[in-house]
Length: 212
Image (cartoon, rainbow, N blue to C red; front, side, top):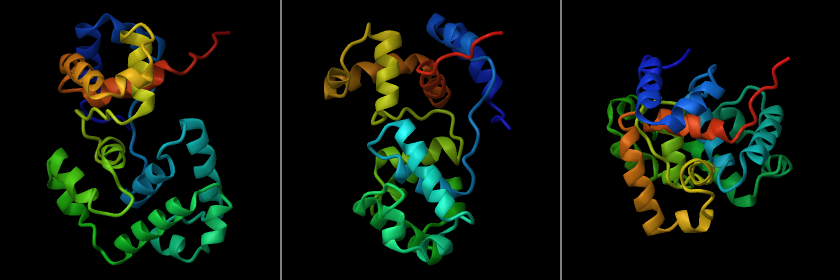
């Protein structure tokens, strides 16, 4: 089920920017949906760190196949060698195991996170080993469904902004302090729906379905 703000955000983005009007017209169906329980959301984000979406989905599928009843306790029962065999680096295996221990020992207060501001959630989650700002922002978007997150560390977002707004400017230039400042300024026009804008920018990198 789409977040309750989705239709309002789509309408606002269409009216605000012709680029989004075009993207939304090409991808009229679908919406941001939760990736499930908090542990799964964070684990999947760790798996996806610093690799392409395609590679992340492939590795995640293997991890999930090796641990069908995916939860912190089940993951802790898996051998590190089994997880590495799914395509995870040694470091990511360590991060996933540490995350699982945090959940098993109730060190992450989920009710508190739900009541916290975006910045507070980021501060609390990044205290966990292996969780950086990008992972915390993915949690805000895909678990808490917060509407106004702009994940500037996401290479897919930078690529989409380059393609749609910056005439194909190299990602390396956008991924600098000056480049990020320009993106932040541009994205002010999308507030308070920057998560929704990000979701559609990700979609813009996909090929639209072929009509029969």
